[in-house]
Structure formats: structure tokens, C-alpha cells
Length: 342
Image (cartoon, rainbow, N blue to C red; front, side, top):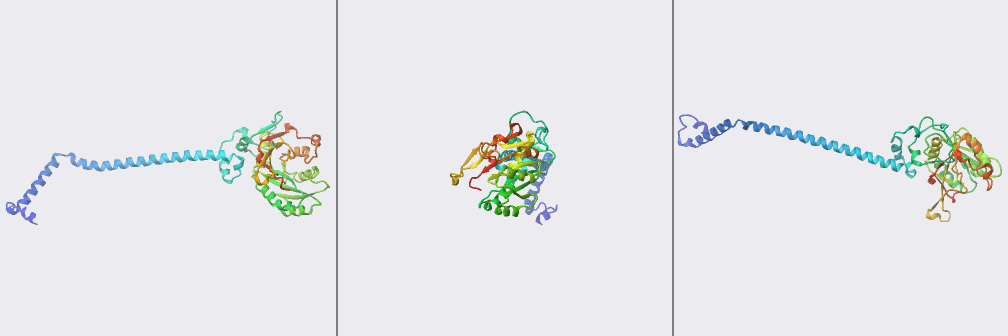
């Protein structure tokens, strides 16, 4: 109020208004300075421009970090996928459910790894064709996948009841891509085995049939079971006293289709050490009683050539299977025999 009163020309010279006159002089001087420096207001405006520029640079840095993180994630995912494919190609891990995503859509399959059924008639004259696991895992079916009938002879003995459920479950857990069935053949005089087999049979997926004759197991009993699986494209021997890896059917049928041979055999198999069962030690075998325990072949070829359970000395009569007809796989973990089982 005093300042306003001192602005009146009649009071401006009063001593009490001296302080207000000084303030007015300073304000006037500041105005002159601002007028003499036209860039001052521009500087203030440019201060707002600097903030916008800093925001743009900040956004660029954020986008750069996001792109770098995205590239890192893609590279890391590709590395993990490659490691998973490598791990899942091992038969010990391939049957794990999480491996399916890494094996079904991981690579482009060249023509020579496309599986067909029936196979192309381009069998070479090599005495034995050997295929490895990595080739079979990378191959893909092109068209129809063959069906497989597995023939198992149910042994006689009290331990059958203990092992029957495990044996059937082992078959159910086969990760085969096509249709499969199991024929349980029992001796017509074995009432225990007949009861166990019939309880688990459904007439389609699992069949139970009685073999006549005194001798059991026998060639006639096995071939009788094969006759009940005659509608299948492939017949496979399925020993009761063995554990069959979930990928056994898958690998052996793929080997048949890829090699164009009518029969498939494992070059080696595994037998648990019966002398020290508590240690869990295993023996890798390549000759002996189970030499044809892993046999799987085309239906027509099996009807002509399959004569299992031959006695000593008879093998050379009907014969070990002609090498030119066999594709071999060196995967002993696909078939494991336990001598403690019936």
C-alpha cells in the first residue's frame, strides 16, 4: 500500500518513499538488461527443448535395451533348444514327455530321411545294414505309418502273476507313432496264465490265445501267436522276461523303413547280473540265448522266416536270418533281460 501511495507524483519526493524509489530503479535496470540481451528468453525456451531432446534420447536407449534383450532371449532360447535336442536324441531321455516338443518340429527333414511304408524297393547288396540312433531320431514319416503286432509267450510259473501287470504296462508305455497290439500266448494247460491273460485282454489292443501242444514255449506256439497278429504290417517278438524300452518299437520300425530291409535286430542287448542282483550291474551281450529276442520284421517275411525257440544245433537248419535281410541297431539299452523274472 505504501508503495502504491509513493507512486503518486505528489508523494514520490517524500523521504519515506526513498526506499521504494530505489526498488523501482533496480527493476528498470533489469528490464534494460533483458532488452539488451534478446537471447535470454530464447535460452529459457531452449531449456524446454533440451528436456524434449533428453526424453527422445531416453526413449532411444530404452528401445535399444529392449532390442538387445530380445536378441539375447532369442539366442538363449535357440541355445537351450539345441541342447534339448541333443539331450533328447539320447534314448535314455527321448521318452520323456518334454522331449516331444523338441523332436517333432526341430529340423527340416531332407528327402533321404523321409520314412515311407512300404519301403522303397532299393535294397543294396550289403550283407548287413547298420543304422544309428541320431539318423533314426531325425527321420520323419511321409504317409502311412505301419501297424505292429507283438507276440509274447506267457511262461509257466507262480511268478507270472507278480509280473503280468508290469509287463502289460511296459507295452502300453511304448511311444510308437502307429497302431500296435499285443498277443499273449499261453499254454492250454496253464490255467493261471490263462486267467491272467484273459483278464487283461480286450480282443483288439491285447489278445489272449491258447496254444496247443505239450512243448511250451515252442516255435509252434510263437507262430500261432503270429497268426493272430496277421493283420499287422510288422510282427515283433516281445519276450515276457525282458524290459522293453519305450522307444524300442519306434526305433526298430523306423530302421526297417529307412534301410528298406524286411527285418530288424539289435546287435547287442543287456542282461542284468543274476549273481549280484543287489549291485544293479549289467552285462552287454552280443551272442547267446536271446540272439533273436529283438526280432521285428515285415509280416510276410516273418511268416516265411521266423522260427524262434529252436533247440541247440537247430539254428543252422532253419537258420539264422539271412544277413542281407537284416538291418542292425547297436542300442543295447532297448532290450534288458532280467534272469530273476519268470
